[in-house]
Image 1 (cartoon, rainbow, N blue to C red):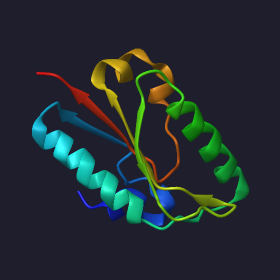
Image 2 (image 1 turned 90 degrees about the vertical axis):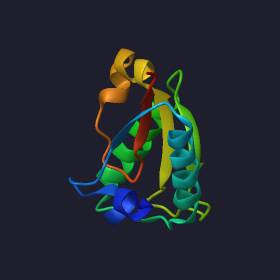
Image 3 (image 1 turned 30 degrees about the vertical axis):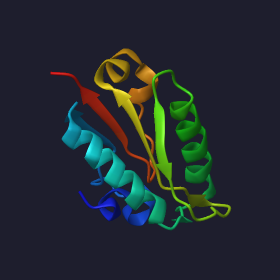
Length: 118
């Protein structure tokens, strides 16, 4: 997966992935690492309007505060007002299933990765 497909249009495309699900493995850990490195290089960009920015910041912050959610990476570029900050976070499949906060769609350049053990 190309990091640009996740952050296209600052994540404001209905067709971009918001949740990536994988089976816990060494390959998944490599994918998470590589995607995190790519996300760090994506430049933040303006969102459509201030209402979306406000909701994005609130919902992203709330998701990242949840137990068992782990921040992997954020863009290394300083974010300006009204811009979305490309971010990647992970949670286990069980943590995702047990936490309704993580089921909420967030209009953003911030997908979540969820993994299940086999």
